[in-house]
Image (cartoon, rainbow, N blue to C red; front, side, top):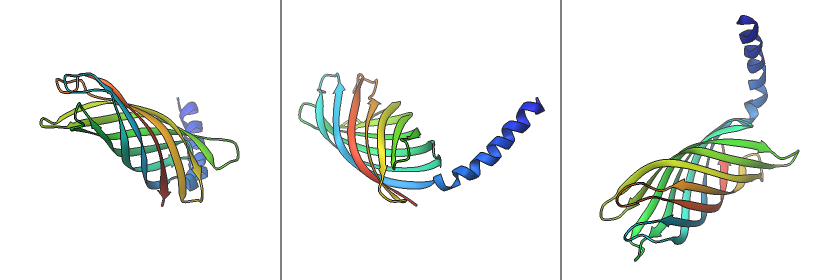
Length: 172
């Protein structure tokens, strides 16, 4: 057993200093377009603008943990229900060659809420794909496509929201 644990421990101990320059906190904002497809007595498919805030910590050049809050516009027959989402996700990062571009994959948990006369909140998953172009060591331009599960209650019988977004991230 020690013949396996000790070499793995040594490899990890020597690998983390190589990633030290790639780790750190970041914040950002994004704007986008949301398509919501839900079924219900007063709900219809809708397309609206979105606005989001992100905060995260990049653990290594290949992995980050990110929290995000999005205002996803209004849905309903009279656009009288506001949809919001808060999520916590793992972000897989793949550098593309020797460029400043990275591909990003997202998987995590989301809590969506529909603000109406009776507010309804539901837990679900969020998955996404995207990319980031590093303009400087601290500023990056991001884009992506995320898909959220939306509800499973009397007010939100079920469905999903797809968000196409672009934004900026600042790393400290």
